[in-house]
Image (cartoon, rainbow, N blue to C red; front, side, top):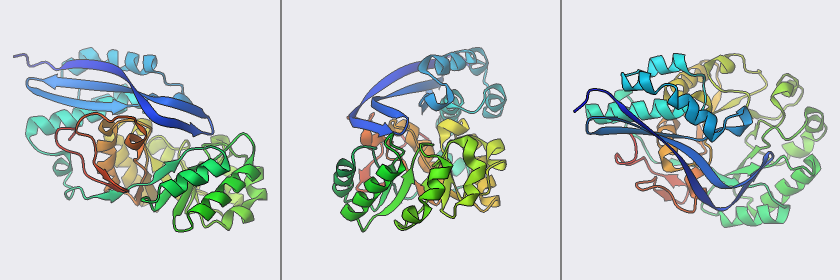
Length: 331
């Protein structure tokens, strides 16, 4: 038996059960990178999604991981990993795999390693994909088991059309709590112009409504905002515009669970509310994010629900109730 780690990298494609559309485009499949780090009989796994918004592709993420194989084989630590790679999907997959491997080698779940309470069942948001107003309203009505809906807006037809979408969704689901994610699809001048109309819907927050470059101008609006594309890691969180009251922490942006845990501490110190979000991916990517969600105010981890089929031992969802991961999955 060798004392060296063995590394494997696999690009995977997971068909979706329907199109998933946001302001930046649509997709019919989830493309993920799965990393396995084996030491003796123990195997740690991590999954991440290349983030096109930041120029990541399957090839660049795979290449970044491959560049570290010699160091990983020789026992690279999570702290060393954080110095070797910038925040992003490659670091996230590796960081989560290292956490999983340590848990398996120690025979101790990650939540105990972190001195956390045993994970509890959490309610997750459910995403309503960008579409025509009537189709989005129908999708919201069909998601009756979910009391928290994340509405994807930022359509090419403009903010007034998005307001019409939001109006129909509210009519279809007057009982639902809504969060709106425009994925940088609006302009700050339009947001200011239609602020009163948007305020009438009682939305909990508007997530990254304008391009990152317009963040500084958001303080002219009195709506509640959540930062997503504006925040990657602790450095960008430290410099975040005061216009934001919420922050969306995603492991794929942060570079894994280790950095995300530090982000939670900093967000609390800055009196920010925390949403733990995800990309469309399998339960392997959700498991460490779900653990982080135990420390958050809200989770949006419905990624596996968009897949035609999840990987074995995936998260159990009972309506909006998301159960902790099985040991056979991660951690």
